[in-house]
Image 1 (cartoon, rainbow, N blue to C red):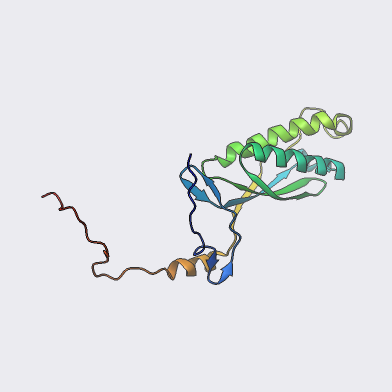
Image 2: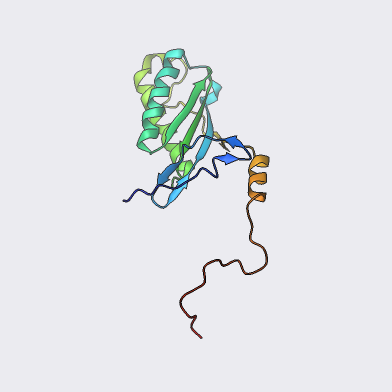
Length: 169
């Protein structure tokens, strides 16, 4: 696969606001997709300790690397966790979240077996549902102004380079 360098300097200064150029280039697409994921424990049991959250952070970071994603931020409380990560558009988000839940649940149950027996009698850890929201570097209003301010061609003939081949009749 060849590497193509593309100038995104125009996009990186949306309405005068400098944005970090941490785009993901994969195949024929360049993207900057970030998602906020919230997972809650089964029955909202207050099971997380600092050691568990630290271990979960490591597990999640390693798992996302395997999916060609990047963990940006992670934290949690006793009954839920928040993760902000970057992913690429050819990933089905629901499949990734399902994998995150199953892998992290299995590893935490293996490594904290005795402790978790006080909270769960079955092999469960996460609630069946989750919250996910897309997020980005600029507000919708700022992006809308940027798009509105594009140099749109006038109604006249906008071709600056004439076609050298005669069109077929």
